Image 1 (cartoon, rainbow, N blue to C red):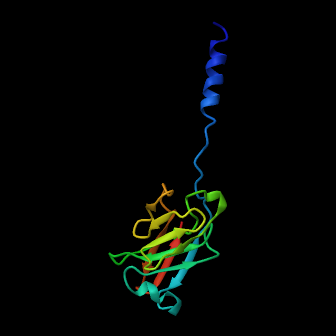
Image 2: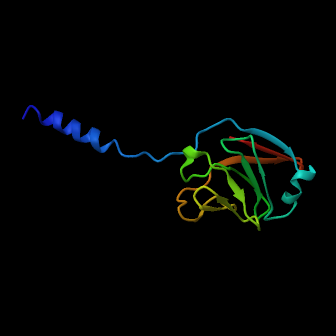
Image 3: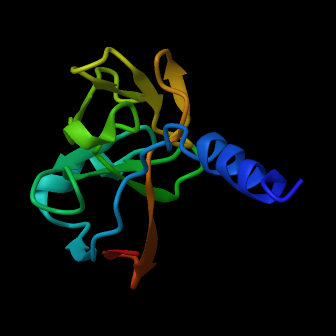
Length: 138
């Protein structure tokens, strides 16, 4: 009877050692873009998207939603995120593809569009000031 608490503790430790789901790490993002920049011409109409390297974990993709708002996601795929595989824009740019796993994600909400994707892309905060400046932060 004295060993019961020890056995119970041992069982709890074993059941708690399952594989944890990897998440995209938090890295500081503070990006300001001028929407009048010719590199952002694709964002001038709904359904347009642009991708950048060197921000976030694997880069950032910015999309102008069908409602006219801007959303920004980390390009790091949520399928095996430890590989830091950057998603690439599809044509037309309503989805992005993880070339490492074949997974697809919708840009309208970042949600999974094709297996093996199960989790949405990591989303960043967006704000527009003065109709011409887009701020992306976390």
